[in-house]
Image (cartoon, rainbow, N blue to C red; front, side):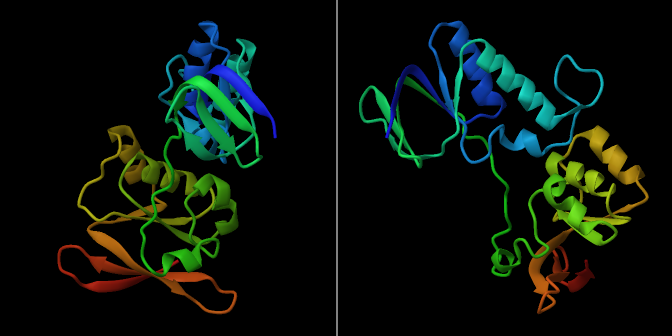
Length: 235
């Protein structure tokens, strides 16, 4: 077990965590960033980034995070490959324990643990994870090349994932429980203009249908949020 002591601890290595690290390092606080189970955060699973200031052309999420980390390290940040399993903030210095057994102590703690995938929480979901149900199109889209796929949601992430999947699938269905999307207007325009995408409005997924054996996911059981009518979508 090793104890790492610093003035500034940062929990999380996404854009927020690394931005804090850059400012902290420039202020002479010698920050330590504990990267967590997904170094670089959710942006590492994003292909096209179009709204980051300073870049008129599309850039790649993983590349952007590499640049942020390089800048943070250049100004004096220490990056630690560890996942925190215990936090004690009852007194200073704050004390974090990693699953490696190492301990991290700091006078300041920045919690930048970010977001994670939002699952539906229905009974049939958990058994189907990895068998046709995924929360990352860029991670798993290749496995569905040439197949019918469905994306659930109506925000930026759902629309971006649907558009990305058109690179792999000729038949993408976006399922949304309302009658309008929440995503940015420019993304909606691209989605509606794409001939390979179909949008199902006012629908919720009630069941992931297992084909049995090694078949995995074969269909989605849908319910209309207005009429209550049930239908099935093959995928």
